[in-house]
Amino acid sequence: MHARNTDWTRPQQKTTKIRSTSTTVPTSPFNAATEPSTATASSSSMPSSPVKSTSAPNTGSEARVEVWNDSVIEGAKQLGKFAIALKNNQAAESEMERRKNAVDSFLDYLELQARPSAEEKAALERSFTLYSRDAKEEFRNAIPEPLRARVLAIRGQLQEDDEVTVPDSNIEAAEDASNPPPPTTTALVSTQQQGRRPSALINSSLGVSNVRLPPSDHPIWGQTGIMHGFVHVRGQRDSIRFNPELRSQQRSAKVFGHNNLTPGDWWPLQIVSVFNGAHGHNIQGICGTAEAGAWSIVCSGRSTYSELDRDEGDTLYYSADGSVSNTNPLAVTVVSNSTKALQKSLQTRRAVRVLRSAGNGKGHYYAPSVGIRYDGLYTVVEQAQVLNEKGGLYYRFRLQRIEGQESLDDIKARSPSREQIAQERRIKEWY
Image (cartoon, rainbow, N blue to C red):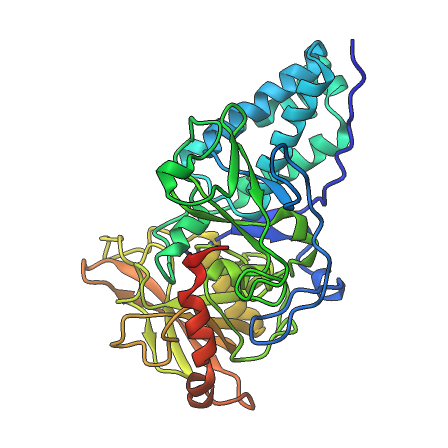
């Protein structure tokens, strides 16, 4: 038998997904406002904070970090296999350490970035049962309590989440930011295939990539850059991942009000607005709960709902989940948690942060030319029942911008700046 390193001290945080995004937020939606945060919007200077590094074989002196780079289903398998290995207690300590690190990386991915489908949730549930407090005694005794608590917190949140619909993307890289590339079968991404130096060492059997961290002074990906908080994973398809080593700098979006942001703050991708606490989801457009209400929404000119939404600047008409697909003229057939969040905000009249992402021109005059921008606080003032093009009934909410904020015309004129637009174009130059 071998002694195990059972240090499972990662922060116990949860993921929330709700109309069309996924990320880390504290368990309580009401205590986040008092928590210290060092993440800032890209329109202001970033804090100077050292980046913790990990070493990897044959990487010289470059700092690296391990990130999950495989499918959710493969991660679910690894999670289940690790529980069985802990129960059996027969594998070598070095092998258990490798598996522990892989599970750590996968749980980071679930908490920070993943948006599981129904099929993936079913695969996860099969593994989650092994970590349940109702599991067989040999599993209960073998699995460290911090690990069990972390897994069950993720399980509970996934059970509350809505199904993800069509993404509200900002630029082409947005899908890459949340979707893992196809599983890699090579041990090392070939420079001959890629035509450039590899940034990720792939452990194909465990689904983890050892990724090179960006230089701290990099103008785009460094500590003061617009992509601070993220790493580039190079493989069969380039992707963007949250840097788990900087998770303490990520600001919770589960806060009512400005959340230390200023109208006009801008980010190149919705996922970056998540890191800075403007919104709570990488893809979905509504962040909130039926109990608390909506903290933020994204008005996107490229979403499935863009034809139903109407943006008049200070007045915004925003359609609920299922608005496009319903064909029943007599009833709203989908009332998701996201919709219930807006209904709760209508009752409470608590302010909702509104973000606009790049649109297609017509009907989206106030949208930024690129990226996503925070445009201030609005109040949900009305819910109406409207018919879509298919004759189906849906809920449409009217939001009114709160007076006393910088005008949208002034914000649109200055944000994004020419410099920010130029930086956004350089994201895919990587580092």
